[in-house]
Image (tube, rainbow, N blue to C red):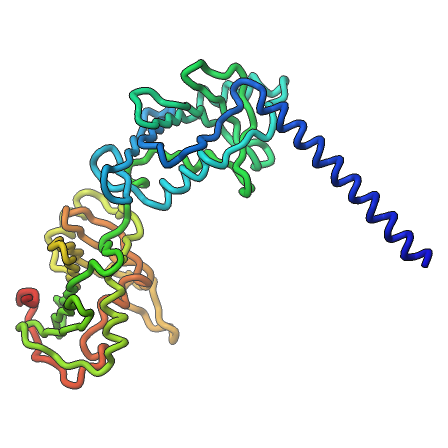
Length: 357
């Protein structure tokens, strides 16, 4: 009985302590909210239509919400990565102030903001930003980020330590200024049931070509390189193969090649050609090249492999040389015999056209 009473007293004390901590925390947050220059958050991110980010090296990007479609624009030239834009909007919504910067540390923090900070302007339909963040470096604990806020009423006089609710870490890395890093990496992007036709052509060795096309009811028709229908055994497997082409992304726009080597690659014969066409009539294409392993890649038995086992080169419709992941593309370039056809089609030569509709 006495043991149970002791446990009850301990629980009462713990509850009282927890309530006290909560009360003082809420009191501190209320005090912070009343200080000018602490209202960093954007309450309505659905109204944000433009974001401008600039760094001290002279690089900048402008992200704009399109009138139609879900993908934002980067500098009016390319589509933006959806994940990166969503992360920014989430950051604007959930950002709060941890606390003020200690008076002794303020001069150094302000110097770092001036030397290495980034300027982030947030617009909501007007010609002037509703809020501007000056984003500095991480705190020594890497759990906060030094920032200064500017609004149409003026710029804050002191920096604050800012973080995002539900996230442990710093925020400065989210505001990058490289146009290449912001670009949408989708090669094929056909949401829902917008994909109509795919075509695969191998242009080396015992080459092959085939296409898969769906009708409005979802039935699939397969053709060989000459446009003749082909029978297939595994309907579910063929449908899964077709659907792999709905959403295909490259790894990076950074090829890590010199300009002269990129030019040579554009003129070289690719190993594969992949196409995807939507019901709207839009056709996207990627030319795929092997990356030589130079003796660095070996199989499980230790035998040297001719090609890199992780990456491929790609050449886009715009002639850009990009890096591709074999993990993504190996399932797309499977030969006909791997698609469970009952009879192999005639062997095609490398110069044959793509299958006809």
